[in-house]
Image (tube, rainbow over all chains, first blue to last red; front, side):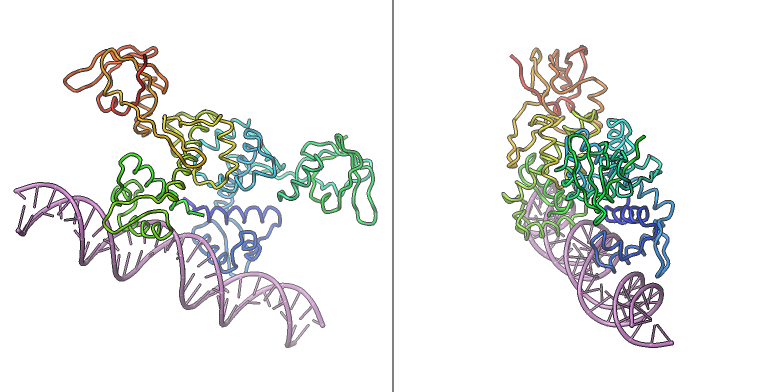
Length: 219
Length: 219
DNA sequence: ATAATTTGTTAGATTAACTAAACTTATTAT
DNA sequence: ATAATAAGTTTAGTTAATCTAACAAATTAT
């Protein structure tokens, strides 16, 4: 029905609006790696097809139909990532590129079977929520590690972004989702944090890293 | 690199040349469900890109480069079918459509992992050979059940074609690859065969069906 | 308030993949 | 041998997705 290209535009609009609220065409074209006029003319066509609400020079919004469609693509993407990690033994840093392609497969039974074999997961390997079959996604709001205080004990539950560089950085430090972290101290000068977890004691994480780690307070 | 469309043309050329030797553009356009001029102009472009040898009004052949490329697409298709049946619990009649899409995924690690998890299979769920990593495919020549004689005992090892109607027909009769068949008798009038296997005694198969079942003689 | 910058739009082209219609070459049947 | 049919080719045109270049509107900074 919708081409992979159209699906990618819808997904990008969805993800941008989840993280920033408003979406403008420049951001969209950057994310999709196309030139501005390309995105502009595509937006016109998405508007004509009822996926997007659009007025010249105004920010973009998905229509309910567009939002649902987009959420279901995100669902396919995140289910695939989970499947690749859980059932095929891939690392969390390897799955994005593959899922980028698998998400466009048009087969209800394929993704339903994945979902079933995984036991209906509600988060992907990076802690991002998996929309349900109706396209509804409950976005939990977590604190970044960066707002916690010395002495706090927290559990790592999700990541703000999942670039493969960041994921490899975490791999090198053996830090995984679910890990219990204790904040030992905070360096006042640069806000870097010293934390302990599992068999890592007194690891130092920069402010940048801390702001990308989403945690749940314990106790 | 090559678009899914180009990949589909190469795969079609490969499969047609395996089963018929020569390939003409009309057959190709029928298989791909496009009009003759569409196939014609694509063939010109495949020729210019070095995938296909082509002279006006002459039958088509893949170049070695085209043949290897095509075989590796067939490899991805058949590995996927095997994976879907063995690891995801699909029936052999459900996997073709999904594999038609998955075969275009560009990811070496993905298909290598599949291959590994499957234990490097050399046939797909319909008994068709899976080309190796170099694109080499050894096509075994099997007898169709239709040439066997009363009293013969044979093993079902492959199918001539795998339309989902045919596969469902076999499902209804609980006939699977690997089944040992005993030929009880042949009806002279229409060449239909009466065979027994597993817990089915004296099932009748039409000539058409017998010619589509590939077997290996036992003992 | 106006100049500078950023953001968005339009116009004009290109490429890939497709079509219908018209035409040509090859094959087959009488 | 030639007419009829089948197969293949060319031409001209469409749509989706992209681009560059030029221009217009909106926002920001002085």
